[in-house]
Length: 229
Length: 229
Image 1 (cartoon, each protein chain N blue to C red):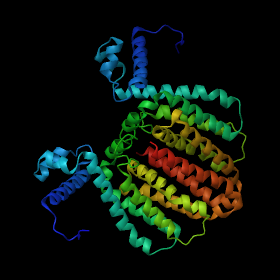
Image 2 (cartoon, rainbow over the protein chains, first blue to last red):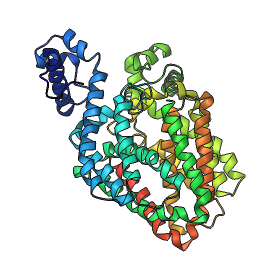
Image 3 (cartoon, chains in turn purple, cyan):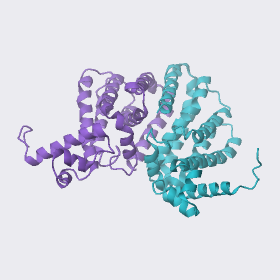
Image 4 (cartoon, rainbow over the protein chains, first blue to last red):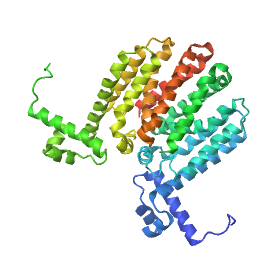
């Protein structure tokens, strides 16, 4: 393995520079107005060189997704290290996830339009986006695995997947949220966490067994449907 | 008021013809490839005449939405007249809603991309789309109001709104569903209806009072967020 301190080659430096310019452009210009041509121009390299490093704009969006989710992980870890309460831990992952999205809110509708089609390579559920989604899935699994709760085992197993679906739906709500600082999204999240705190202990009641089984089946069904898209 | 049997004026006939051509084009060509120019050409009228009747392509999409939802209402009413069971009635509205969407599945990703932005005039939650959404809301309200259940009053009041949110999410799942005949969407719906049948009676238990109140608040929060988008 190479040391991370090893000096970068010229090619690596060019790649890193193109990546930085692209990430800034997505923040400042949004998805629609960011082009390979513009990035090449700002970096002072040819379009061909840019294509050599990033075959398409979609590849740059994947860099953005990874950047956002690596930032998400870095922001969530200190909080996760400090709490063993399940709902607190879940809240940490959701809140730090929203924090990371914040700089992109102005251009979020354009991103959503480009990403929402099941045929889009930048769809969060696409094969290309799997590495970024895996970070989110890992964070929710860590939030659940590190908690000292007493959930039924089948609910515990299904919970990370349900929380990821919740994350995608919350992100969608956030795109629509025009309140200052997307305050409504935060309030909706607080509400969802309160519901989780009140609802999870009920999962141990015998009367909840049958509906819980249906709910877990529903979560599994949604997941299957999404990945097959 | 005019009798509906009154002969149409030439202008009314042109409008009806343009509308028919547009609806067929949306089914056969999808959203992206349907243009005002193409519709004018097929109708043998000028682009100017077409614009006179429909100021933009978005106006034609609204005709499509109304056509789909009027078909939905016509398909749901016989079933609603024949049952007083709440979950059966809700199932009738969901299933007939999916039936109406069926002819558009091949082009659904293009429609979704064009409609999903909160800034899009063909977003189902936009002001322009309100008349079509009102038909869906009315159907779910009718499904609940005509049922002989024993739900707490606050749950009963909030239920139609929650079912409409469920309808929009189910339609989104359906866009992603590439299984033959979108069978997975039907199975997911069946699962959701079974969950409703098992879960709704629990709403009367005192222990469910606090989580139910949070759930109702969450439904109300989602609605506020959406309409403000």
